[in-house]
Structure formats: C-alpha cells, structure tokens
Image (cartoon, rainbow, N blue to C red; front, side):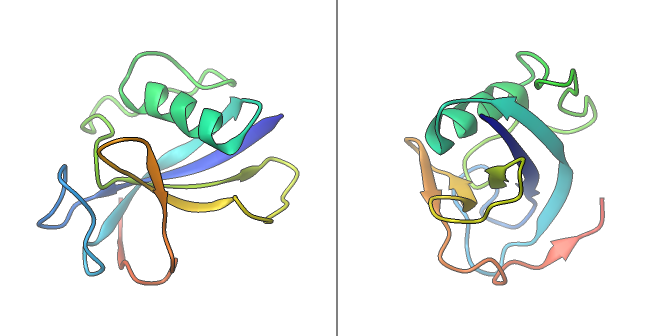
Length: 111
C-alpha cells in the first residue's frame, strides 16, 4: 500500500529530545512510501528523514534541514485519503513512534 507522510521538525526547546505540547513545528515536506502497515511506513519515512535514500517518488529530505530525530512529527495516511486509525500524527520517540492525542496542540511555523 502507498502511504503519504507530511513531515514536521520540532523547532522548540525540547527539539531532538521529545515533544512538548507548546513546541512549534516547522514543515519539512511530503513523502510517499510503499509499506504493508503504518509502523512500516513510519520506519521508511525515518529512513528518508535520515538522508539514507529517497521516497517512492524520488523525493529526498531537504539537504538544508537536520536529519529526523526524536520529537519530530509525521502525519501519515494511505494515499487514497482514508483517515481511520491507526492513521494520524505520530511523534518520533526514543523507540519507535507515539500517536499524538491531539493534532492542534503544536503551533506551526513557516518553512
């Protein structure tokens, strides 16, 4: 299945450590990946976000941005547009990914 992930980096005081509810998020990009599940799709986006290769369409993580790390956020869903769980906004955790409870807690800053 093809998934689309919208990636944001945490640019707040807890960047690269965790994600606090008031940390602002900065848009990074839109990435498409082929995977059998949401956890697998998030791992492929982690690979792209750490500049180890392109997404399914050849898009790469911007070279002028730091690599993806803990506290960064990916809004992920199937490319067909369905939004049923476990699709949603995930934050990169120390081990794996945590589903965010609320999508509106973090202010977005311009790229």
